[in-house]
Image (tube, rainbow, N blue to C red; front, top):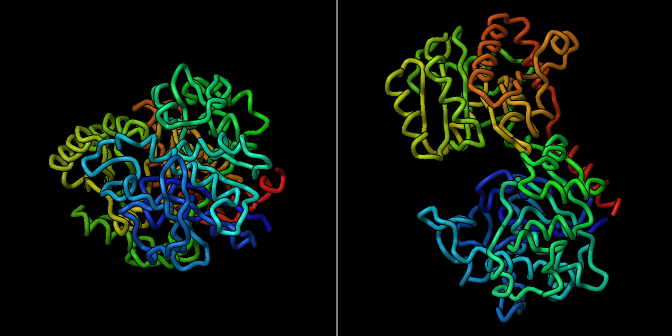
Length: 477
């Protein structure tokens, strides 16, 4: 049994802004089920919900700050969550990275440097918890200083650093190094320095024993200038320590057979019941009820990374095709406005819901026939996996985790029973509209379509598989 300290800036369902929270709320549970002693550590934000209030454990002094440690649990589990409680940094409305007005916290560097220092104290058993980590599993730049600081300790625990998205690096002006009072021996080009700046992520990349990222294809992509953001050389150098392990999905939450949010549960053996959800979704969104017209869904952040600009470029032509389109998401205000204009002009074809609604997200996954996910880059992605579980055929761009989880429906893959979606290569509107037209042809060949749906629905995207790969990695180091 390994003692694993899982360090994350967010954890679902306590607080979530993105996929990192889903991993932090699922992988530790799966590891615990494999018999490991795993503890999650995260900041005690004001916005935390869905857990019992943390009970006070102790106070730890780091960098002239007295920081409390509180203990709670992941809901409905025995997995312990340690909350790093420092009200001057974390007791404010907003999310882990942005204030209520959507602006980045001005002291975000200080916040996460303090968090990293506390992780080191806990991992090395200097927080009086009578618990010494064998492995510290760090996630994204907010925990990047941990492997660097641990490198200065005698007999430190082993460290793994997981990259969820290379685009976010925790870069600060060089002067921040002194402000944060970091040890001088870490400031050099092989350490935390990046072109005269302080880079939190480099701490994780340069000093950890193993680097993982959230899909095998993304592990290759980040070694190229397009996806490496200036660190591709370092990643290529560390190639032998770099591994891509696909995220899983929470199949207790995303399972059409017992999803409380949808009109009619269904399974691969009762595929015709999926139609009930389509009718219910069309009614709810005010679209004409029509089982013959394919309904396309999209759930996501309305930002360029997600390829939403490609969708906008295709929408005019989509309104001339025999299809309906339902979107749920929020993001760039100008994109929101343009989408809403389309919905106003074509109410029979297009439904746009701005914001996020968990219930509606499940209903779209269950009620749509086809799911659009034309991301410019996607380290792992979750919606394409949810879609396959729900027999909703994803159209994806061949990048990152999308390339690893969706098998393109070509004559060969249809024949051998592996086809589970439709993929295209170029990040262009022309390539996307061609994929959309290809999906329409397949949809109208219902025997083939049902075969693709069944292939998709029987795939195993559970965390069990990923957790076993992480456990093998922990044992390796």
